[in-house]
Length: 62
Image 1 (tube, helix red, strand yellow):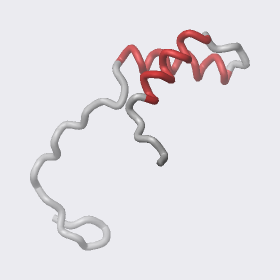
Image 2 (image 1 turned 45 degrees about the horizontal axis):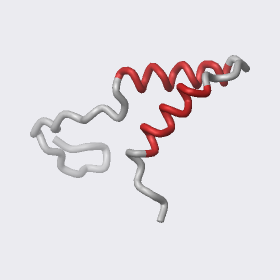
Image 3 (image 1 turned 30 degrees about the vertical axis):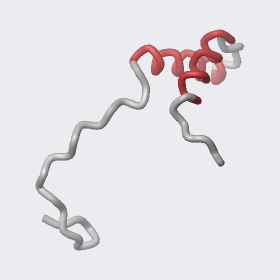
Image 4 (image 1 turned 180 degrees about the horizontal axis):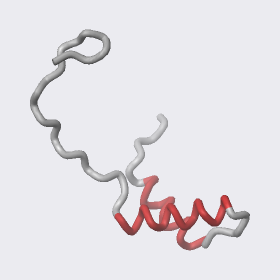
């Protein structure tokens, strides 16, 4: 089997991916983003909680 560049592809199944967000975090992200898109003010505490949880997972820029 090859891809469009003619490179061989493995037939081995890929390992399962870990979710980037928990269900609760994903729902919070949707809530915050929907409020912004709708021109509403997002819930400050939800946004702060989500930011803290995401920031803990992102490597520093340095």
